[in-house]
Structures are given as structure tokens and as C-alpha cells.
Amino acid sequence: MSVSIGSTSAPVPSPCKGVCRMSADGQVCTGCFRAIDEIAAWSRADDAFKRAVWAKLPAREARYAEPV
Amino acid sequence: MSEVVWPPGMQVFERGWVSSNNIFFADVDADADADTGAGAKGATLVDTGYGAHAAQTQALVAHALTSSSLSSLTRIINTHTHSDHIGGNAALARAYPSVEIHVPVGEADVLRTWDDAALHLSVMGQECEPFSFHQTFDRDDLFRLGGTEWRVLASPGHDMESLMLYCEEYRLLISADALWEHGFGVIFPALELSNTVKTIGGTGSSAHASFHAQRATLDLIASLDIAQVIPGHGAPFTDVNSALARANARIDGFIADPSRNDRNALKVTLAFLLMLEGRLPLASLPERLAGLPMAQILNARLFAYEPGALANFLCQELIKARAAKIDGEYLVVA
Image 1 (tube, one colour):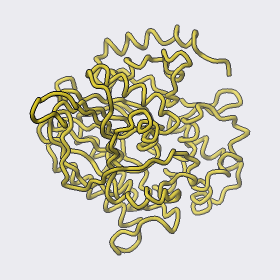
Image 2: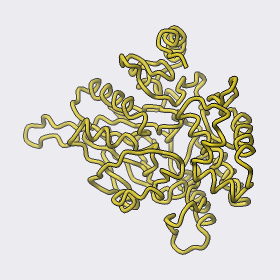
Image 3: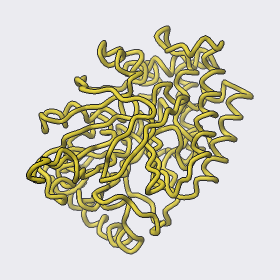
Image 4: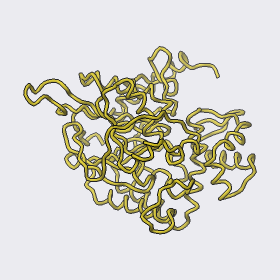
């Protein structure tokens, strides 16, 4: 492959978009909308945990996303 | 993958592709008082991510310290001195003034003089807050992390001075950018970006020497008993043989045609900029690329495209690699 970006063997991919900055209230990342404990746990979490986190992201994005 | 056992107190913060992963260790037996057996527990972070992400790195460290009932980060170990691995050092040193920063011995001079060219900062449009280190370490040194022993291994190639950490007891390798699940980092010494690129033992062209050094590093990894690799980027992975086969095919391709490494590096310049900013106006790309010396050097060597043609070419390449897509008037992360 030409550029190695975003590949993973995990069946549930990481939501990380490389933004990696927290919201003003410190609650979520403004790129992937995960909370700090979810980012910290991700590399060892099981698929059920990861799917549960993914399911929470759209609502957080709607709440936190800044207009561009 | 769930069968892989980690030492107590070890956590991996998987950070994506702009920032390196960070590996946290609660060093429960470090610096314990010999008489009372109490207090002075330490914590170590291996690699600290990119500078623009330092606040989140700090939040992750604070979270890990709290979960380990520790009050302070006491040691930082950097595998090598690229800005996506050392970018959080300065902020963490401010937050934890007693932290001791350990760097590969071969990087000490570059850091002391803050050699912008050797650190690949301006040339890639990257920024990094300078920091002072306290200790150097070298191959065959031993670190005690998470209550177990980690041996330092040399891993020249991506960076000639880069070091890896291997834990025999748990069969874990912290590979940094010497081996990813799909490939490895750009072989920077082979790009010959400036006169300050380190020469390698007088073995002839630095491109040739650094490609062979990378292959030797892959051979070294193949000789280890490894349950899981914790790479510098991407998820930890267990199928080490498949990763090595992909990496070996890639380095063989570079040896056969060194311009492949140049082409990959040229794509990485735009990919990094895109990931850092999330979205780039298509109309701005020729000018943005003109501001990246590495893109200009490699374009002049490979293609000599006009600015607009270079922007178009790199957009197509990133889209083809599924690293980017077009969204209206913008190039965005796919």
C-alpha cells in the first residue's frame, strides 16, 4: 500500500480522526467525540464496549460539533 | 488478541496517525523507599504524541495516574525524536516538573542544539515545543516498566537512532515506527533532505544503507518471541509474521526502486497536513504545498510538477489510498 493510514486488525475500528483536542468543557474529543476514559480504554476494550461507544458518538457530535 | 497479557499497570493510548501512540506504565516498584517500602511510586510514559495534541495527552496521563492512585508522571521515554513522538514532552514537563526525560543516545546532539533540519520540523511544516532531556539510553539498556524488565533494541531505518523496547517475560515489543501492522514509517535518512542527515558508517549512499538497516531491523524483530507488537501508530497487533511479510516486501520494493520511498514521503507530507487540519480547501493546496520544503524537494526530484498539477496528483493519490476524499470544495480525511 502506498500510504499507511488508519489500518487496524480490530474488527471495530478506532473512531480517531487525528484531531485529538478536547472540547472546551473537557468532556469529549472534538474529533471523535469520545471521552477521555473511552480513549484511554480503547486499545484493550472488547468489541461490545467499542460498539457501545460508537453508538454514543452521533448524539455527542450533534451536541458538540462546531459549525465550520 | 484478548489472550495477550500485559504487565500490571500498563495502558496503551491509541492515538491515530498525527500523534504517536503513548504507552503508560504505573511503575509500582520504582523508587520505593527501601526502609519503609512506602511512597515514591513512579509512572512512565513512552512517547508523548504531537504537540498540537498535548492537552489531550496530558488529560490521558492524568486519567491514568488517577486510576493507578499515583500523583505524578516521573519518567518519559522517547523512542526517537520525531515531532509526533516528542511533541507532548514540554507540556508534560510543565505539568509534572519532576519528570525525567530519557532520549536515545544518538539523538542527544540534535536535541541539545534543537537542530530543526535533523528534527524534520520546518521541512514538513511541523511544530514542536523544545524541551530539555535528563538522561540518554542506548541499545541493551534495561528499563523496569510495569514491574517487569524491558530491553532496549536498536532499530535503524525509519530513523537511524530510533530504539525499541522488548519485554521477554510478556513477549511484547514496543516497535515505534520500525514496524506497523501495515508497513513502517517513511525511511527518512534515504530522503537526503539536507546536509545534516546523519551519515551511516561510511557504507556508501545513505539511501542504500538506511534501506538495508531497516531490513536488518525487521530481521531482528523476526528473531524475537513476540505475542503482540505495540506499534507507534495503529492498534496493537498479534499477527507479527504477516506484518513482517508485508514490511519485508515493502523494503525490498524500496531497495529495488528507491524512488518509491520518495513518492511515499511526498504523499505523507500532504496526508500529515490534512490530518492535522481535518479539511483543506482544494484551492489552497498548491500554496500550502509550496510552503512545505519536503514536498518541494521531493517533487523537484521525482516529477517537477507545476504547483496545481502537484496538488491534483497528491489528491488523487490520497483518495486512491482511501486516506482522503473530496467534500465539496474541500479535501477531507476519509
